[in-house]
Length: 509
Image 1 (cartoon, rainbow, N blue to C red):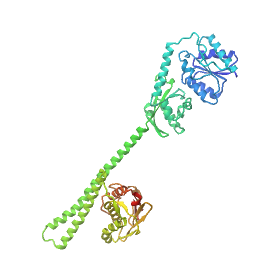
Image 2: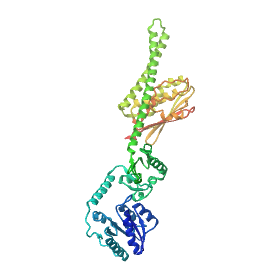
Image 3: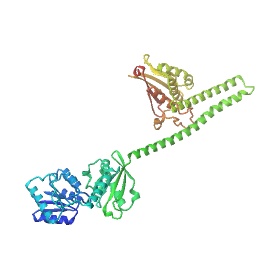
């Protein structure tokens, strides 16, 4: 066995006494006055044997022992527990599994016991299991028992705390971390102890922690308390507190609070609040728009009826006035129908009645009803569909609503001389319908919103097109209720293509 010994004890008198005993026996003695110094010494040089006290400032001996045994470099170095609490805490200390135990006592007894342990270690003789040298004539001391009880209670409290508590010494070195702190960090205790506090998180946070610690030490408590960082998959709120406010040399606590759930709830509430504000804005705009859209046809109807009530109105003028009233009544009917459908959707009463439905036949019917309007605008309507298309299970009235909305929009936004082409194709389990036009197109920044309720794409100055901004939203709801989907491709000046799918009967049977 070599002659290099490391003595670790915060009692300087005991360290000097043990140094004399070992020095007289020809041992080279290295001294450490707390657990942190011991770990630093072991990182530099490896002794042949270690004498280790238990109760010490900064890092206790039991944690240093764990460090020694866990490190492959030091795991085989014999460790002798030399402590003044062996008589009061014998069972716990023996459970550590050190190579030998010596109770602190009178100088002559201590010399005799230390030399006896060294002889055994030199000869390779294993110590007797459960043997503690120096316990003769020693009795438990009540004050020591009380101090140990306080120590154990403090440790139990720290382990029970839900926040991470990291103890940091005056040199910014970490001396302890409770269980919650280790779980938050996702690291092992021995990987953290002895490191600097600015390196406790991942490297990208070193500058942040350095700045926070400097500001805390400078007395800027409000500036650093409650500081939040995103660490791995969590959001941590950092807090600082001096261990002894009147004596900063004792170090400080870094407190880690996992506030991920709270932050998520705040973000969800913020998002919900933003959506509510948006809904309030949209509803306000909708009320303004509906008021205008209701007022315009009602004014036309009232004006026509007022004129008809006067005597002397000719047949031709009467017919013209009735035509105006009828046209605006239809416009009102469509507006009210859309609003009622929206109310049913929002209340969950948007029910549908399924039956076998021929998509191509339904499209032809909708195109026939729009033929006169398309003809007046000189817009060509065409349909391309195979003869053997499978049927779908659908609500015919609702599907007709989809067809009419998409086709009327296509005609409405297609200039005179343009065209609207409808193509139907059968896929593996669904039908794909494309409604393509040569119209004005939709600016790219509006494509993601065209299916939103009440949303209407802004028109060029001077242009005016009737509509509530509900038609496409209702189309989307109807198709999704049928198990389909809808999307759009468009570019300004190049027209638009609204495409949708609907499952066939065979795929949903």
